[in-house]
Amino acid sequence: MPSSELSAMFYYVYLLRSTINGNLYVGFTHDLKKRLTVHNKGLNRSTKPYIPWELLYYEAHLNEDDARRREHYLKSSAGKRALRRMLREQLSTDLILQKVYY
Image (cartoon, rainbow, N blue to C red; front, side, top):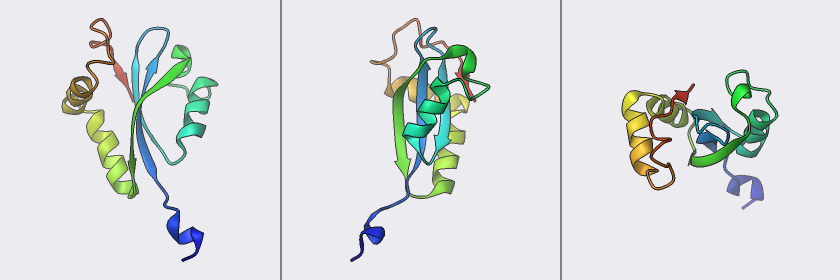
């Protein structure tokens, strides 16, 4: 089996946290390392004022539609609550009420 058949294209849904004020950002990408670099270089208008960012959580999906649907859910009120429950040990009590940016 050729190696190209073994390599899968993943789509990532990720959660970033600003290290300066604790704001959270949910996003979608197919190249997670590159996207984190873009955020931290200030090339994204919605995250530029809050750099630097740290990767707090991510999910890998094989299907782009599934990943986009998951991103949309995590940006909803129910999704924000779910993220905060899943990551409550990582999020300090003063950061739990921070805004999740789109």
